[in-house]
Amino acid sequence: MNDQEQNKENESPEENSDIKNGYNSSTEEQVDGQEADGKDEQQSEPAADQYVDYDEDELRRLLAEKDDIIGKLNDEMKQQKDIALRKTAELDNVKKRSEKERLRHAENAKIEAIEKFLPLREDLQRTLKASEGADIDSGFLEGVQLIAEKFEKILEEYGVEPIEAELVPFDVDLHDAMMRQPASDDKTESNTVLKVVDTGYKLGDRVIKHAKVIVSE
Image (cartoon, rainbow, N blue to C red; front, side):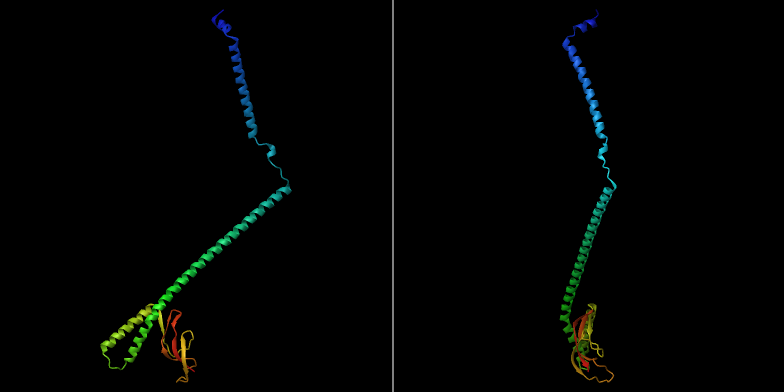
């Protein structure tokens, strides 16, 4: 009997049992793993009963519902777009009104300042008219004339125009009739400005002061 046979005989029954049990456990684990892999493969494959077979009427109904939902969404988008456009238009109108209001206030402030200087212009014009033919120092008269010319340029730069034309049709928007009298010329039509008693003024299309006039009958 050789050494290997003697070692086998010397092995205890308990050791032989442990080896058998270990082999059996390993075999069972391999079988369980194969069964689990098979289950995973079965679960990954889609089942045939997951797909619903709709009939034609059901498909038509679903398509109709889809079209109805799309139509409602389109209507809602259109309403929101209309609201946004209205809000934009309202904002634009507010900006325009604000700009007009700002310009109106600026124009009113300009007119208030101009109105305070108009009496000075009228005094200068009266002085020059009264000095015609009078014995006045020429240097003094030239100084007054120079001031009057500068004043006219300033008014012109600010867009102020005097209303002092005569023999023009009477205009209630420009003139204030003080009295009526027959015209010296028979060719003069009725309602013609014969004389400007007090000069009027306008700034652009806005009348600052109506001219006081005498009108033909």
